[in-house]
Image 1 (cartoon, one colour):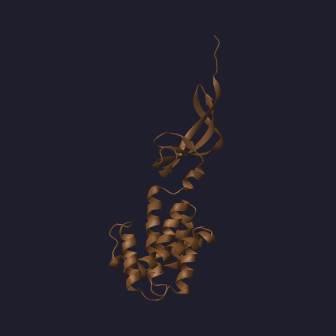
Image 2: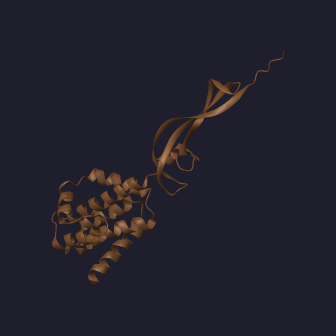
Image 3: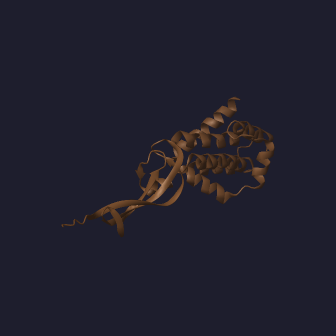
Length: 207
């Protein structure tokens, strides 16, 4: 009687982590699995001995496509929305009090601009943001958005800051420098920053 021994190697995936990520395949947030690919020695098709680890991959929970783990560095839609709303509120609060006073004109423009972008935004929200303003947190948000926002998105964010600045009667140098630094932190060129500020001032002068 002849007995055949069937042996070989097989790559198996084992799940190491689960979560939510922005899926390039679906274009929206969805579940993922962080999986480890490892070669196993098999006997009669049964994996018996773990061998070399071949790599780590992110597997989309919807399409089952595999991605480099660096895909998890991309912000989810929910994270991005939270960071953008937070940045808008903190930018406006910083510009309003840059000259140490919250003028009626600046406050009115700030509320008008953000009421349509941040649900429930009002004077009480602005006052609370001013009271809790954290310069380090704002810098972190701008750094985050610099690598995520499109050019148009950066321009719209800076335009909001510039419109609030332009509404002030004095338009002091300190406030202008703050607005310029916001644009620079977003990765915009000096010429682009000055163009956005100039457009906001021209619009305010016509109003």
